[in-house]
Structure formats: C-alpha cells, structure tokens
Image 1 (tube, rainbow, N blue to C red):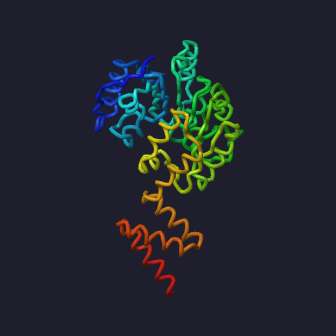
Image 2 (cartoon, rainbow, N blue to C red):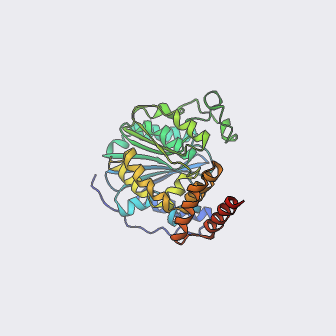
Image 3 (tube, rainbow, N blue to C red):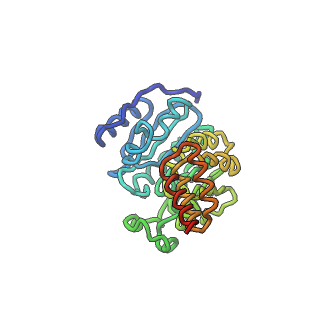
Length: 310
C-alpha cells in the first residue's frame, strides 16, 4: 500500500448528533467503510497509507472538544497520509460489546492489520484508553498509547476503584477483558497518568510488562487528552510513537511545555501552598505575572505576602 494523503472537508462543527453521524458516515463510505456495531458504537475507516492509527473515542467528547469536531485520526489521514480506524461510542461504554468483539475477530481473520507497516492504538481517556490497550491484542507488534487507562473495572481485580459504578456492571472477565494481559503482543506500550490521581496511578501500576513505559504527568489531572492538546504536544507524541521513536525521556522533554499552561501552573501553585511551600509558589506567581498572565496570580501573590506579614 502506498502512502497517500486523503483530500476531504468535514464541516462537522455545530452539527447536531444525527447530522454529525451522517456526515462521518458519508466520509468513511467514500474513502473506506462505515459500520454500525450494535446500538452503542460504530467503526469508521479511512484508507490512506502504510501507517494505521486506531483510535477509541466518545462521540459526544469528539463533538465538544476535538479540533473541527472530527475523530482524532481524520487530520492524520488528511495531512500525513495515515490510514485511520475509528471506534466511536455513543455512551460511556468502555467498548465492552460483543459486536466489537466480533468486529475485531473479523479484522483478524481478514488479515486487516497485516496490511500496514506500522499500527498505533490510541485511547485518550479512561474507558477509551482501556479499550486501546485491550483490543491491541488483535494486532501483534502494534504500539499503544493509553492516557489514564483502567486496567479493568471488575470488582474482583479493581474493587478499590469506586468510580464508574454504572460501568462496573459490565462483564470485564470475558474476551478482550483484562487490559494489562491484552498488551502482551504489543511492541511498545505507553501509559500516561497523573500520579496525584491516586486511583489512576493504581491502575497504571497494574501494567507491569517489560515493554510498558509509564509516563507520569504530575498535576495534569484526569483530562490528560485536553491538557496535552492545550500544550501542543499531543500531536507530536502520536507522531513520535508512529515513527517508533517515542521514549519516556523524549516525552518528559515534551512535558516541559506545561510551564506555559496556566491550568497546570495554577494547580502547581495550589499544590505548593497546600504543602507549605509558599516561597516556591511566590516565585512562580512572580514569573507568571512577568509573562503577562491572569489576575489569578496577582491575587495569589498578594495573599501569600499578606499571610507572611501576619
């Protein structure tokens, strides 16, 4: 298969759910295929070049937060010539659906993943990141990027995680189930998480294989995909992974961009103050004010100095 970019326009911004879905359907039908997977999911494929990006996303989040309201891989098909397989959910499903099991079984039987030189599975949030890890078993030798994935929500293995109670009712013990085991055949796996988010850190610790690289992202919170987008490093991370040149060290260099992200810096200031590091917090507030940042840092600096006088 030759590398080739796909030329198309989406115009998805502002569309209601049905029109958005219909437009995505039309684009995928034109350049690949579109397939409904049960009542809660669909798969869309854009055929371009030898690199395949497999993404797991939620339709509502795509419409609300992604650039141009597109599935994340559309831009790579358009600009980089990557083929793209998007698995999209209409609910917070963790992609636990027999229709998806059957879909991946069929792809394996058809040798679908063998057509590509490089395959990258990506999930940008807990349930989607879980799915990217779990279904990567269908493509031995793939690379996986999972942002704060759950290893499982089965009570027997993760009863300590009291979140997502509605999702815990699903069967995580059947096929494509326990994500830390499903990554065995992957070439490399990158697990990003905020170590201060205790339950996310516990899930990350369950991914113990030698080919797993943990990517701690302190104080970036539970919306890592949006944080990486704000910092402008999400795209770079994916491209490095596709080129097989992403490493923990290179990611930490990318993460230096957080010093320019006001959301992160505010969290850092609050963290420092909560742990009685007022002097460090004062220095950071002064630095941000020199860069012309918001009134938040001015008020916080005034409060630090006033408390010192008292």
